[in-house]
Image (cartoon, rainbow, N blue to C red):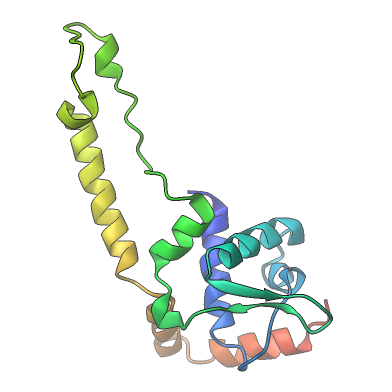
Length: 159
C-alpha cells in the first residue's frame, strides 16, 4: 500500500474535527504533516472522485467530508487511493511449470492463490468493518485534546 493511504485516512480523520461548513485546502492539510502539497492534493482529489470528500473552489474553498464519518469505511479510503484491484495478483506461474495442462484455471486450483485470496478477503472485511467515526471515537477517548488542538491549528494557519 502506498503512503497515500495513510495520508488520506489521517486527512479524513482531521476533517471530522472541523467546524460544520469549514473546508481545508490541500496545502493546509499538507502543512499539518509537513508533506508535499501537490502529492497531498492528489490524494484528496482521489477521495473527492470517490465521493468521500467534496471539493469547493475559491478563497474559502477546500476539502470537507462528503459523507458522515460513520458512512466512510477504511476500505472506502483504501479503494479510493489504491483502486479496486486485488492486492495479490495470481500470475498463474503453475501454467509454465511441469505438468502443464491446457484449459486449467490455475487461479482457482492453486493453493497459494487460494490462501492469498482468503487472507485478502479477511483484510478487506476488517477494513470494511471500521469507519472514520470509529477511529475518531478511539482518538477522542484516548487523546481528548486532539480534536481541539487540530481545530485550533487549522484555524491559525494561513496557508
